[in-house]
Amino acid sequence: MPARTDHSPGFTRVSALPSGHFRFIALDVETANGSGGSICQIGLACVRADNHILSYATYVNPLEDFAPFNTKLHGIDAQTVRDAPDFTQAWQQMAPLLRIHHLVQHSNFDKSAINAACKTAALPRPDLSWSDSVKIAREVWPEFRGKGGHGLAHLKLALGLKFQHHDAGEDARAAALVVLHAEQHSKQTFAALTRQSRRGQLTLDL
Image (cartoon, rainbow, N blue to C red):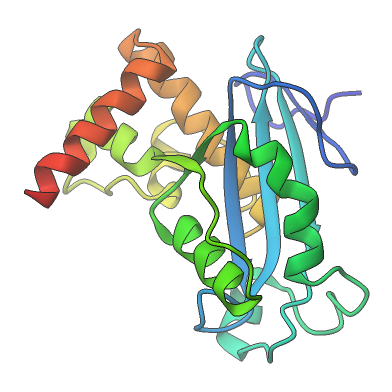
């Protein structure tokens, strides 16, 4: 049965990596320490054509020490990931699904962490298609600028979202919900919103 926690499109937590074709996939990671490559949890929110979300998360053994600050933030420690796959094992399982979908992250941290973890594991830099739900939120809700901003903590309150912050599966679902709310609020398609967010990034880079 779907586990629903808010009035947004329903979601189902799944224990196995989803398969098939989705509108887009939101991705979030948690890290063990200050190194971006020290991924200890990866969460995916796979958005179906009907906007129902399949929420998946896996722990990852970073093969690195955990910093007390990070463990306090997300509750994951060395004991939690003792029997989890390392990044190479987890990534080899996920990569075929992620390569064929457009990915959403909430800020650039997740893309940077994936790239860093691949470099640490001597894996090729992944060729993935990304958009940033922070930039999408800035385009759709400019009034939040200076009044709480566009981080997940404020969007949770402003949009009435319910999720557990700093859990990779929950944060991935939250990023997906931000996009779905943005589509509904702006009456624009996902493709249009991601084009706008990319144009905004190009403007900032000039």
